[in-house]
Amino acid sequence: MDRRHFLRTGLAGLSLPALVACGSGGSNTDNTANPGNPGNPVTPSETVDQMLNPAGAFPWGVSSGDPTAEAVILWTALSPRNTNIDQIPVMLEYVLLEEPLADMTEWNSKFQEGPINRLGEFTAFRDRDYTVKVDLGNQALYSNSRFMQGQIPELTGNQALLYRFVTGSQKSRIGHAKTLPSGEVESVKFATLSCSNYPAGLFSVYEMVRREPLDFVVHLGDYLYEGGGGGTELSRNGVARTPNPQKEMVTREDYVLRHQQYKADPELQALHATHPMIAVWDDHEITNDAYKDGAENHQPEEGDYQERKATAIRTYYNWMPLRERFPRDENTLAPDPREVIYRDFQVGDLCSLIMLDTRIVGRDKQAEIMAVDPDRFNPDRQLLGFEQRRWLSDRMFEAKQRNSIWTVLGQQVMFGQLNILEAPQVELLDQKLLGNLVSINMDQWDGYVAERNRVFNLIKDIGIENLVVLTGDIHTSWAIELYENPIALIGGNQLQRSLGVEIVTPSVTSSGFPDEVADLVSTLLPLLNPHIKYSELKTKGFALIEMQREQMNVTWKYAQSITDESLIGVENEAMRKSFTVQRGSNRFDGALPINIPIPSSPF
Image (cartoon, rainbow, N blue to C red; front, side):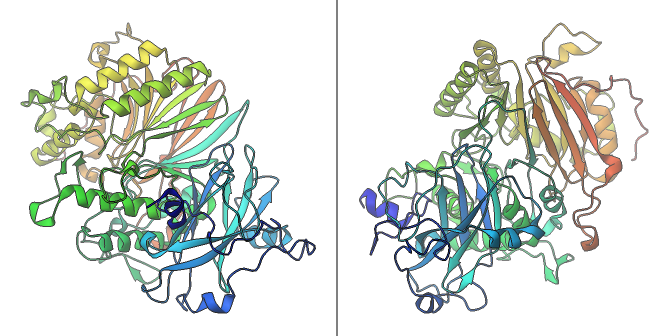
């Protein structure tokens, strides 16, 4: 397969114009607005309509993602009449806006005001699950391509736009996207999300985030789950939230069906239509407690793990608005550079956002039990892996050189230390719960102590001054100050300097601690973990982060309910928790001292 054919078939994840019957370029605006340059004819609607599902060609909506200051990925997926169809042509229509317009009720009228720019044709291929991605603004990518209509625009920082896809006589819903701010940036606002298990609850949190005025959304993983059970007692618009398929996803068909089910959810679909998303996987996009060479939830009878992992990754890239890389080897599913999801984004001079993969590209198998398994201290054990760690060093050095005010690491598992077994009155905890806590801890950076120390050394050696770590995975909320030896802080000893702060976002629906013990655990843990300034261990929500030049504001917001349809998108305002981190401090302002009395045991 040569590179030209590769680009045609979209295996890079980016749909280039169909390279057959290409014209000379043509106008990039609505033909009615510019009749003197009508462009070239595209595939007749009647012909295309015969390829499409008559019930609707765009049941999975639209998405935008991976914004830069010059470009943004626009995504959709088509539903064919049958899966014997090899490819379906599709056009992109978009309207550039003077300012962001997050109010969905205004999109239709604003789109009609125009001018409507048309770009295409692009091609949805069967071997890409009929998904389409356009890297709008990426003129270098399309430099050798000619479109039947339109041309790739030159986008600038903070450029908002409305867009939709058209195939035959059918149009997708309208989406809203924007590029990242550039130059000297005063502020940027984004939300962090993780752990959205479809059968565990309604996606009320996604609707809460949709309503926020944001520059982008960061999804830190577990966007979907592999399990096949649950959800029988819940429904949305009369649709039961049982997983599709109703079995663990293992095959390519399983992974595709599950992605389709999630993308059809009204709250998730509306979120994707409103804000660009920067996403990374965690383990459940593949299977539970995945690592480089295996997973806790993969058995020999389920086939070869590497093939399963590659299938999950390929499907993830097809169905997510991510920018992709050129494959090394067309004849194998793995190794594949699509396995390298770590990448970075620059928000002017304000923020360097570095997205990491702490799950599969470099991770060794998890240690067993921290109290008895010395392997967690083994200096040879890897979590990032050598290549990613070297890449991280380069990105952090670049952030320092460009004088980025905030350096942000977006990743999956808790970075800060969590001392559990030595906590006072730990015997009050249910032993099964305690065992689960210890097991979870070994999946985090606590299970890879030498690797965390190497990252601490990078932070110190490079001189990163305002470090923020974004974390998901654990289904709970935490505000953590990052010290090399937080145990030494006990008794008020503040001789160490905090190297950064960690913001752990709660889950969208996945279960946290049982209600009857969550408050007890929140109280016990800080007694030997004085660097933990806040924890909330049972409620679903998200973290809202606003970075300014002199401070960062962090607010945890929580859903009123994830089971009541009438409360979708409603915040439990009484639970809202906010902190401020001043530039240069690496401390959470407003954190209470650890002097809270221990509640009585619920057991």
